[in-house]
Image (cartoon, rainbow, N blue to C red; front, side, top):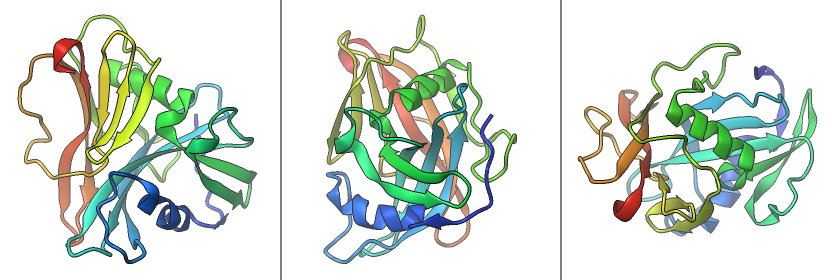
Length: 219
């Protein structure tokens, strides 16, 4: 189970995201430097206790309208082989030393635990408190069998698509939009989804879809 250390990070996660976000095709900001502010998120536990897994929600107010992004990150004590393209940056952790932060959509540990979350085999954890479930994160799975994790990851202007050879697709909503009940319109092939909550700039809570799992032709 992950332990949340109350310590220093240099640079901070938000500082890393300030330089990384504009490099993403789904980033909606303008020419000004991003101004990301923490708006929510959750964690998942690595059963091996080696990899930190965090889904950060940040709101960027640098553009004409505030935009909220979902950013899954993994934190490792050594570089992940073959994932140089997914490196967000490195940080000095006050307790754990140097940490390598990766775009979690390219990290097999995060993909395995996110599949477990959708299937109901894992519980989302509070972002800031050790050993505290996050009840605002709700996962559902109506498909058959286990969720595959042999994804090929593709970023585009609409977000991130993770696709397996059999056509299963996990669509990660990088730009979050509030929905009254956190649901998605009924669609053929929808096999699961993850919804969660975050804080809007005015201090109110919003709820929306984080990810949708599709199978078959609808994917």
